[in-house]
Length: 211
Image 1 (cartoon, one colour):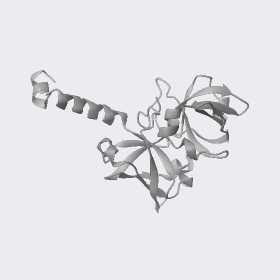
Image 2 (cartoon, one colour):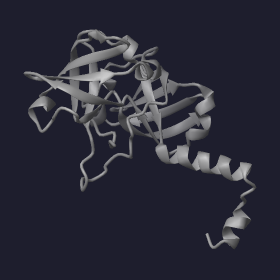
Image 3 (spheres, one colour):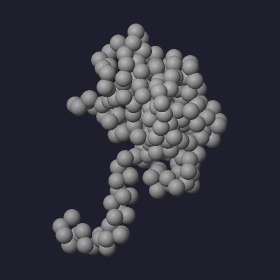
Image 4 (cartoon, one colour):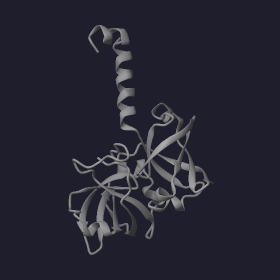
């Protein structure tokens, strides 16, 4: 579990393959913290497991499913990515609950400077529209952001200067691909609602049962 508050910008130094798995070796000062083999770390919002530790770098494994759901295919040696270690119990949750399980990729449709902040518009598959609400939360490349506006298959967010410089956002441009994770709470509520409709459960029945 993560919060969407980025801790560091890592640099990919190697991308070897292992069967249908891809390995990412990432240079980052986080390796000199309390990072251990077996730890989870969000890499551009994708929860991956640390399998090796080196001098100033660590290696994670990405499965075929991860590759198909994320922007893994665009990475090259030298690519930068947002990093966040797993949430510690007892820590403040400054962003929102992020699982690191990417729902889909999206493309950057617009990057506009508004004063000192940045407005980012991204396009995604409209089938996910039901998971997006105005002023709700979304994780884009692992960054916890507030949705400003929503249209079918499009959403916009704003980033303050600190968020732009502390992440890879300052490098984004029109046409870039990004990872999207929609709010986990919204997914569960949608699932419960669908289950309720299929089983004849109504609001009145819930009220009658004491809910």
